[in-house]
Image (cartoon, rainbow over all chains, first blue to last red; front, side, top):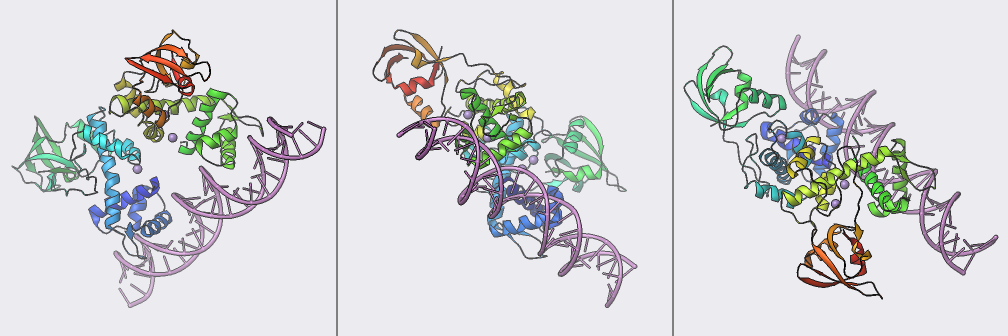
Length: 215
Length: 215
DNA sequence: TTAAATAGTTAGAATAGACTAACAAATTTA
DNA sequence: TAAATTTGTTAGTCTATTCTAACTATTTAA
Ligand SMILES: [Mn+2]
Ligand SMILES: [Mn+2]
Ligand SMILES: [Mn+2]
Ligand SMILES: [Mn+2]
């Protein structure tokens, strides 16, 4: 059985591989808040387990085996988040830290039951795809709101960032998944957007718009 | 934050203290399937944390602080078992191993929500009392079926033993909590009991009768 | 294209938690 | 009560995971 440490490192490497492809040691150290040498020694261990390809001074490459294993942990994380929101009444800003722990529970039956009770959901409460039991994960086909033009009407589908603070900010603006958003104006200077959705009229910063994924 | 190891040792010591009062190192080693020296060194650590009183070669004594901390872990364990049975459809024989892991989750909100969704249950699926949030635990006021006399009518309230095998055995006999049992005969030689309950007529061994707690 | 800055590595040490081997105390049995 | 058995302790080792300090390779900038 893999330790929680191993699982957390692997997951962090997998997540960075999605966004940047070039995974570097420093990024993992920052994501996990550990020292560079800690990452270095764990990377060697993961490579020894066949989960990474590792060559000194080269960017890390996750193997298919590693990808699959990471996706299975992420599956548990996201099913848990969905369960906490849908079945236990938590807000989407409250569930990540709990899921961070529950993702290490060893009990296929426990997660299968969650999955079943939830009706086999495809996405977690933040719109991220839930990998299947084989560790396969759907690709995100959404684009950031920031890429939209004035006059476009789109639907909020997922988030590119899921910190508590951002989620609370979205709560305060009543921005939730499924909301239909119309782009009214884009400020050329700073790319702020004036938008309208469910009776609200708001100006959203470029930073926020880059984290709202729509279709 | 206490490690899972610390929590498991403390819980094992607390549990032995309930049944035997005289807690000895060997019993803990057997319960946790670790070596005697492992227990010895952990005992010293727990004593240093003020959770045990420890004197060389003397039986272990758990302190009030230790008792309270253990009860809070057991609260999480038993709430989890109840939740798994009541809200997720698991059988009472399936939940212990999952609860053994979930009891270490650090999230008061998670367990508070379980408690609330369950309607603040007093007992777990095996009839054991659920300690309250302050680490106080109700005393078991039930007696073993083995102490009953022929002609008595009693109700099955809790179990004195909760291994998977025993629970599956009870399933096979359709013996569940709440079942009304009448003692028909007691065999003087081996204390086997002939009993009747919900249309069944069975002979139960003395061992089984000693583990069925009734009132 | 050398110098500075950044990124990655190695060596060595600390802590937690487990173990075996050897021994000592306490208890049981003869 | 003396011997045998059981129980508990100590010493020393091992693995996992973390760290700091020192160093090296790579990348960026002057
Ligand atoms: Mn999350
Ligand atoms: Mn985690
Ligand atoms: Mn249990
Ligand atoms: Mn446990």
